[in-house]
Image (cartoon, rainbow, N blue to C red; front, top):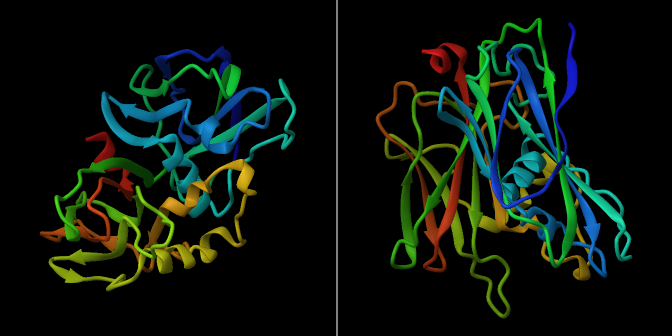
Length: 303
């Protein structure tokens, strides 16, 4: 099996813009988005670097099939690919170059010819990067985009993930959020605005459970922090940063994994159900984010 790994955007000067790029026509395993810049006075933190990439979107014939903010993509890389993205050069020196690479995956495993984006026609598949100019904490920014193609692949499925911004419900307590149906579900990524308050054990999303046809399914109940604790199965190690490096990105996220051993046996089939939702028990009346990670069929994508 042959693969092609090549630059599709090289040393592009970071700007406040929505940068749109035509993607290759061959089947695509994943995209590598590399953000590079210079420290300003001290070491630029992970959160500061991520803050300059607002959103990553992949469009097929104008329809979004992948849509996440940069922090969401960082968390998805941790939980789905079971490793934290590569952030270089932990040196607190002015103008030292640092780089962060994020993976946009189209399969639960990279380089998988059975699960990736299929062959397309020129102009049908586009990548959009919603960016802000790095300035006071990370400057002289450039962006590089690399695409990994599998020209001989004939995939059956692809990975789809789209962001749902959930408004504050108006009160604490249960808040049901409808999730997309029609595909198999590999997991649900949740983001809580409030995490680890001072002198309080309450999180923004305090508990989370999944309901299929109004019955609890798999995750029947569970504290947000317990779901984070189960992330050991995804991350494989304790992820920490020193206090000076800022807040840990993943502490605001939990991943309700329905493919924990990557063999499809626990996937949720939503093709024939009438209702699929996540019930968020809010400890704080505030906005949150929900992202269903779907395993879609190529037939469904191309129709």
